[in-house]
Image (cartoon, rainbow, N blue to C red; front, top):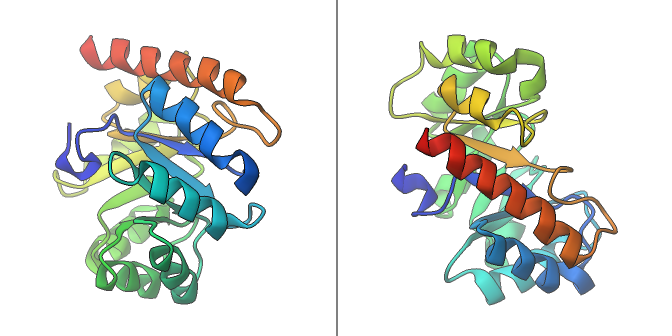
Length: 208
């Protein structure tokens, strides 16, 4: 497992729509299930408040940060409240570089080899292939074959419990999991059930 993930499974829980009042309960359910990387997209209600709560409670043992980060100002906002992970749906060198300047982890969104190499040149830590469902495992495998061997690739969008093994076999290093582990309004018990299923599927696939 890459040191990039700090010993955690390379599974990023994407909590789009999370509200601050439920952040700690949902976070605890994910951590107990075996997730060690948590992302709150910035188009969620009061996202910085949720990120700050999660970072204070779980930041010593988890990687906490934000998704849908589009500007350098947003990078600063996330880092200022204790977030470390900066995930974007697109690839902006300025956002990547600001993340690095602030000591964060940069996971920009890419879709083509051109975008991937531009992100690598800008200094990103990992690549988020999004939406991965449009590439499929074979498409990501083909692009990954030409990338530097040290560069981690995460598939985001379209990864499910039954298919996670296919993605791993294709060389995908990690995953961003959204609506399959959290949907707005889900309670902690539901999140726990879905998260445990993903952890079990990942562990089984990684061991085979």
